[in-house]
Amino acid sequence: MMDGFYRIRIRPQGAWRTPWQADTITGLLCWMCVRMEGEAVLRQLITEPMLAGEPPFVLSDAFPGEFLPLPVAIRLGDWPVDLRKTVKRARWLRREAFLRVCRGESVDAGDLVLASPIVEHDQIRNTVGRATGTTGAGGSLFTLSEFRLDTRDDELTGADELSIYVRVRPGNADLLLNLFEELASVGFGADASVGKGVFGFPTGAPELEPLDFGSPLRSEPTNAMVALSTFQPGHDDPAAGVWEAFVKHGKLGPGLAGDAFAKNPIVLFRPGACFSAPLGGPPFVGRAIPMDEILDPAVAADLRDRGIEVVHPAFGLIVPAKLRLP
View 1 (cartoon, rainbow, N blue to C red):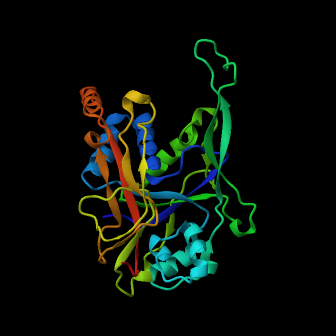
View 2 (view 1 turned 180 degrees about the vertical axis):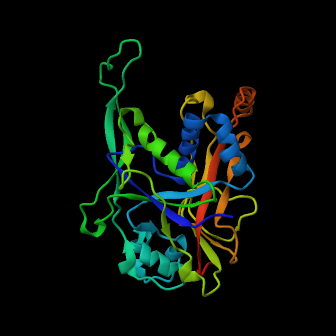
View 3 (view 1 turned 60 degrees about the horizontal axis):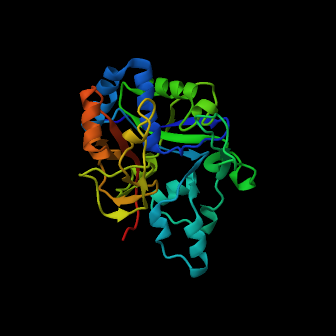
């Protein structure tokens, strides 16, 4: 049984290169468990429960401030022709508008947030030769994308933090908070060693802030759900719905980098996916993708011989809703 619905607020202290997607965050927290407690504790407390369909915690992606992802079902509504491009461009809803959607109420164009507090830009770098330690004759320039929060737009005031929503099984709250604190000491994602992905917490330490997303929906039965995470549906998850999918080329993380350990491409769903679902189902969807599905057989066999079992955590946190779906 999952515990209540919480939020962890984080405060980026600069740019980051790796998107704050739920599967990536969870994967890095797993590495923090290895770093702090060792592989045996990781298997016992996190990966084995995940493979059994009972994750100790399920996270959302990190969203700016009070914004939540626009449910895909909203894009399919009967919008006037002159607003359809606006709806297509919209990415966010403020929390109060998101909850209205979940209650089956309507939203109008004024509820749609078109600007994004998360802005992407390219950083130019030089290729440095390993033999010479210098750049090539032509500079050998290349670009890398990175992200930062930009709150200069009046519409985005208050979005100077990222919100991660979470459900956690009883007895695992301290573990989750300790892993977040350790991750903050290391940095999030690519190029953390050179200062990317540095973050802290508004109060100095991670906290589970209780939220009640369910109470507005308890008086009436719901027929659907909205996912708040980047995830991959499990075999028994609802299949009727609307969503946006993409292909992810994931990495195994610290200690197992390089082409030899590259993950196979996997298809994931973006936050905002909507599915038909009866009231009373589990508070999450998705699954832990086992090693044999994400690595070439020879690589998986080699890691297993070394006592390493890799999983890709692809669970999705959900909110019950009343939606009109195709």
